[in-house]
Image (cartoon, rainbow, N blue to C red):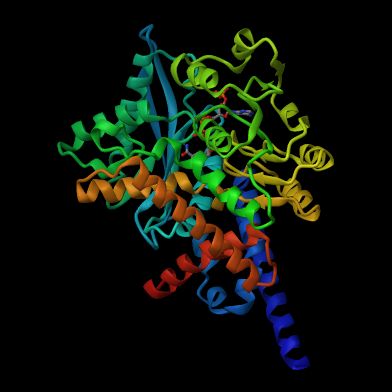
Length: 459
Ligand code: NDP
């Protein structure tokens, strides 16, 4: 017994040393890419128990290979603005891993986009996509183009120029992009139109998040937000808690936030706050979702305009203040690192019971530690926001079969997928000695399938 324990300890130390050494290499090889380092660190540390139990993953350098993308493509995106001035942005596509299926991951248009952001998102996408149980690999892309304040024609010209280069690297069996921040059905439509023109064929499965009339899936728009709420509800139910009667704060007011709010409200929650990158609204009696949907989805306006129609609500400039609002459940659905250790401490002090990450990497590593130390139920992004890419995979399946499922059919499949992700993450957390720790459970469950495929396919 004692001997076995000593062997296990030796294996764990060996795995720790391997991970520490590899992390140093990652930082050295990718200087200044702080978001990428953060994402890799979170995943690698959580994999130590698997590596200790399965030394072949170390022997065959699975992590060394996973952390180096198959390729990172950067390109010039020239376009002409409405004044006839030529502008130049930078485009990216990272193809991280196609061990279990074609590269798959969204496109982000935001001025903060750089190689570090795209690589952190692409790296996380490998494990998230594996967790969904669908045959999709990991990729991500985007541009530092800022869609804010651009005219419809400027957006169209930019999307066409972006796709002119991107089209050389994607395809329905190689790499299938979708939307993300700043890229919704409108942008996907312009890019799909350009792709079709360039290749001279109707390859519907090359992009997901398309309009319903030309190959899109019902339920894709709602999938990430609904999926996050389904996942959190599952986590709450295990502790005899529920959205019903809870007070909820949701950051952002984009695609993920709006549909997370909608589903939380349908399940009986009172959503009291949401935000955009300028500031946040607090509406004690509950946010009016019809107003938010109109302001954001139709009129392209700001959260501050909400109080013009609802004078009993309060608008505050600045984003991080939203986490000072007491709530039972917090759903960060805006962007990376929006909850730091200070916000996490405040949330805990104000009695938060659960966090559900709708956005990618919205909590810093320090914030996650605080939540876990205080036994706050924590649904990590890789698991909680996997509903979006899951329905994207369902869109690909419908495109291949040339048929369309109803909203009820898609929603039923989404609910099953989110339940499976919860179950698999929980099972892995129990199997590796950290029961209930879904951060570690989700990383391990996502990793093992990819690692085994890599072993089977050789070096
Ligand atoms: P959108 O562009 O539709 O919405 C983003 C929202 O977040 C906007 O309201 C934006 O405000 C707000 N926002 C941006 N930066 C900040 C900030 N610093 N503080 C507060 N609010 C901010 O993007 P999505 O909803 O699609 O994506 C949101 C997150 O979810 C991202 O992390 C994305 O990677 C992730 N995600 C998205 C999926 C999808 O299917 N769309 C799938 C899985 C993950 P403003 O309008 O002022 O910029």
